Length: 322
Image (cartoon, rainbow, N blue to C red):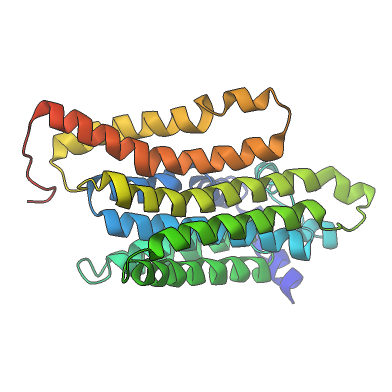
């Protein structure tokens, strides 16, 4: 049933090869870019710290679960299971590794779903818009022939559950002293256990056809980076609450400066500080630290820089939107 559905979409796509393929590829690429991860950072830095962290937690939780589930089930891509499926050529490059669940769908559901849910009362149009975009992303993965309906449904479920879990976890952790530290410690233990599982888990033998498209080590590295991001999100949130406590509200001019400074620091922490680790030739450590430092730079160091710069300027800006 699922392959017949993909073949139907494939026929429609091939009927309009210069329109539908590039369009759905554009939709898919936008979700797989840094622009999606920038959404929680922008909210956190310039608008609402609490909502920004909920969205960031949602993405971190969803990514960690998705990469882990992929290596647990080890389900090949649709065209590897049925030779009649011909994926869109440009989509194959980003469709590496195993298929279930869809990482693109999960990422969009985690971030856009959280964004829509957090702002559902003040701006009622945001939730249906975000929901429609998530469905469009899921549909794009089917239209491109790189995921089955089960894959995108699984990704959507993981994304929705991550939205719920992120909000509940923050509410629980903030309701009593010391819970934030316990949650940060638990995140480190959970991710360490996940990395150990990925390293020791036996993987199925791959045929010559599957070896061309599935790199088990690359899949494992995705897990390490997602684990570092997950642990970094909770540790950085705890550290910001303890020692930074910056005010996310700011004037428009300050908001623009925060974006420039924040993005620059994020890039320094993600690529600059981790550069020496590449020489060690331990990609597992490199990817974990890269994920961890990315969040640390965004959640702790960037707000510290904002506070220092704004204190030096000795301004008293009005909050954004006032």
